[in-house]
Every structure is written in structure tokens, then in C-alpha cells.
Length: 230
Image (cartoon, rainbow, N blue to C red; front, top):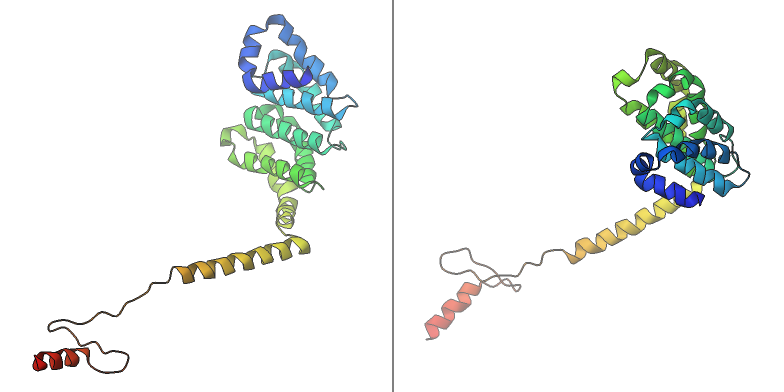
């Protein structure tokens, strides 16, 4: 049932909100309860549903936004990689669509996203990187002076080394890339040989330049001798 709900919200959240009536108001409190479930599948499905609701921001989510943020904070160190990824996605989605809800918490949220950028799971780290890309793409009217100050002073000096470190491959990966590069270069060389143009020797006619054969003799002279014999 929860998986079906998450799919419905993902595919048709607006229609569901418009036509479900008062029953829809019970969805958000239920989802906020389920993200505390010991079952990781329940947590992931509930988070997926909540992410889908951010775009339409129903009244129940507005009044419970603080509870939602507290729930995300509780899941920040979840042992399940998928849950941690969805926590990052939730924050990025709120930042993108409803930035005002993160403004009072920008310092702690930025610290969490900085930590997640170095997550042991590359999938989580990549999801966390979307936060910085999204922040940099925000309209200037959506960013308060305090938010900009937090990023510039508190986060940026540590963020740049973290991002650069994430771009460095380990030894095994470097060796793999070098080997693939050699294979590509070899294939490219063979391809270039296959495509090399072949020039055929043509016989000069009329008053054009004389073309010598491989023996060094003048082909036109041979033709002249033949004409004399005739």
C-alpha cells in the first residue's frame, strides 16, 4: 500500500491532492510517522512520498514542516544508503522549490550536506553535491544575506577541498582508466589506418607534366616510340 501511494504521489500528486478531499489531510501525518519505522523499506517509501508532496506543498506539510525537518535530521546517519540518499534529495528539493523553509536552519543544514558530500557511499555523495549546484543556481532574491554568509564564510573554505578530493580516483580506478585509454588509442590508430587514402598513379596526357614509372623511364617516351613504329 505504501509503495502504491508513493507511486501515485510521484505520478499525479496535484490530482490526488485536488480530488482526495479531507482524506488527503491524513497522509502527511501518517508519512511523518512512517519515516521513523524500523523497516528501511517503509522509511524509503515514506520519504519518496514526502518528496513528491513538496512541489504541491499541501497545508498539512506546511504546518508540519518543522517536524519533517526534524525527521530528516533523525535520519541523517541512517545505516541504509537509500535512506541517506533520499534525505539529501528531500533537502535539495526543499531548497529548490521552497527555499524559505531552510533559511532559519541554513548553518546546520549546510554542515550536514558538507558531511554527506564525503559520504562513504558515492551515490549519497553525488546526491549531496546537488545541494551546492542548486544553491548556486538559485535566484538572488531567494538567497538571504545570512544564507550567503554561511556558505561563503563557514562552508566554502572546506567545501572546495572536499569537492576536489571527490574528483581524485583511487589507484585501482586510475589503472582501470589508463588501460581503457590505451585500448581506445589502439582502436583509434587502427581506425585511422583503415581510413588512410590510397593514391593511384595516373598517366599524364597532353601538355601536362610527365609521370615517371617506377623504373624511372618516361611513360610518354614509350608512347612516342609506339607512334613512330606506326
